[in-house]
Length: 54
Image (tube, rainbow, N blue to C red; front, top):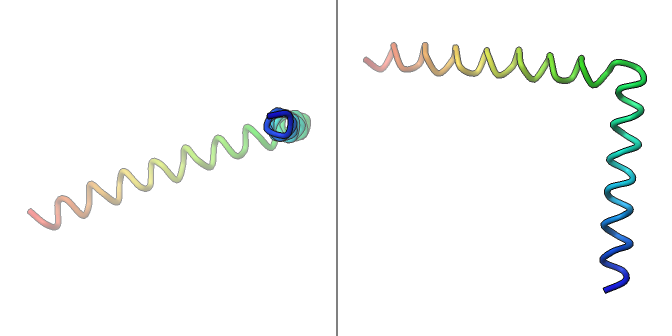
């Protein structure tokens, strides 16, 4: 049981440090923006495929 808690705390700590590091250099915002752009492209691709099928 103790090792499960240690593993969970380790994962949370690594995630928190990574988030702080990315926010410090404004890379988190850049990553969010790229996800948004790629999501928009994916929706456009699905719409074009749907129109070609019809």
